[in-house]
Picture 1 (cartoon, rainbow, N blue to C red):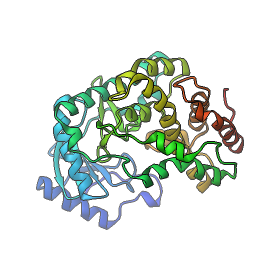
Picture 2: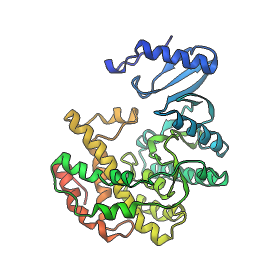
Picture 3: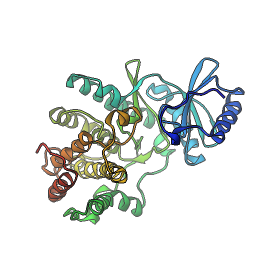
Picture 4: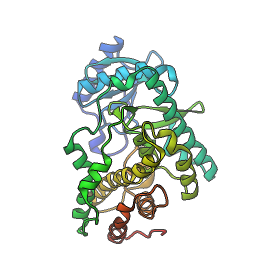
Length: 351
């Protein structure tokens, strides 16, 4: 079967089993073999682009068949809103959708030399999430997806990222009660959420933002989508503009919360999200004993295991503890913990 040969290392090369799997899949769905196959994220990933009858399609394998089934329902339901790829077919754990030729939002944002262009791109991403949420509610989709974060062990794992970071870097634990964080992070809201709404899961195509990878979507607090996007290491905007966007859009994502409740929830949930991204970056840096190449991270949609991106996360965490965004006195004591992370990683913070 023809395919583009990745020019990376041995772990990215196709083996016979993978070739046979692709052949079986495309024959099952399209009744023909692809004329070309490409692996934008590397051949080790369970996703590829196939050309069939001069049309390009994305074929992605999910961990469970139930995940693929859920994503198929979501794509079919959301397709009319114009901000998701069109659903083509599902075959077991495989999901097939249209291939959009745009660039991922972090790559597009990184290529902008003017901050105003970055802010405009981010604002388009924010408003597209609002459009999707409103359309999903119009179609009652929030009641056809599973609830996210309903179990205590899930909350404990999310909050536990702070302890994991402390252990890996051999620094004191943050001076904040994890039981308080778990209680504050609980959500009884019934909003439809993409959940993994980081900018790497969005692309700009024909001046519109499209969101993909919907297997983790569910029912929770709409504010979580806003937080995931704004607090990601690849969301590359300066603080004054970040603050303006938060002030403008946080109330629109509040859902069933009052504005006051939203401003209390925001810094806590944001700090937990930042800790999650930090834990991944620190884990991979320690595994390889070095920072990763930034351009490769951008091109391959990888965690930002780079000094600029980790510094960005830490600076955001400082602003949260300072009360610059939101108002929750209970997280102020995390400032020392953030400084200790920066010292261990030899990073210079702006505040």
